[in-house]
Length: 264
Image 1: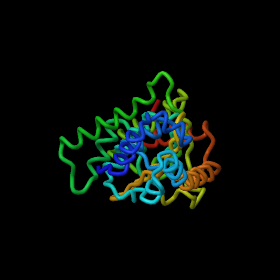
Image 2: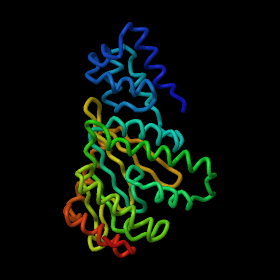
Image 3: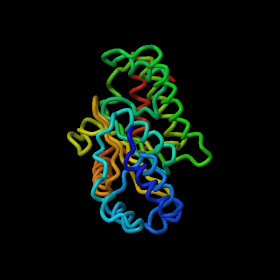
Image 4: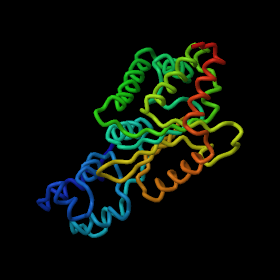
């Protein structure tokens, strides 16, 4: 992924004789956020860019030439994956498939088998390894707070067959019962809701602005704009208000697993 913007910022910072921390102090930002911008993983908000211009004496260059965010889906995903590992809070919503961070290996491979054109065995193995690595956030000494909001359609769509679905639903139920995720289900009875046409992942951090990631079949977006991220959080909160409570959601998953043929 081209990183002309970040490279230019880094060059201007060095020309000014500033460390990342010194620039962060001048621009009222965090060093981590500066590092992500220079590496091309984040785009500053317009307000941040204005403060960077002032701190570096670069006129309005950084605020006028913000990246247009037209990079490849894979690049967006890699940036989001790296941010996910640093997040203190992750909010997932799904309406089609179980979010990758929660998938069992069997479910992952069943999902990948639906791709067209088909993935090669090597590509499938690489994706599976990446998703399993993402799930390691649950084993951190201080894991992030993970909210999982699932549309009932995710539970009803039989990916890979009954055994795989039962295993997958019980895996999510176990994560919820062990307090590693906060689980809520949006039943069909709710009807249309604000997230029906989006599948966002929302992330908050200890030392940088929040971010959002949305993905469709051939399009993805990493959202840095405070206004956009705030709207995504508002939509999530609105949908969450219509969801089943935690214990009812866990019971719903276990009951659905039984419908797939699993018996305690």
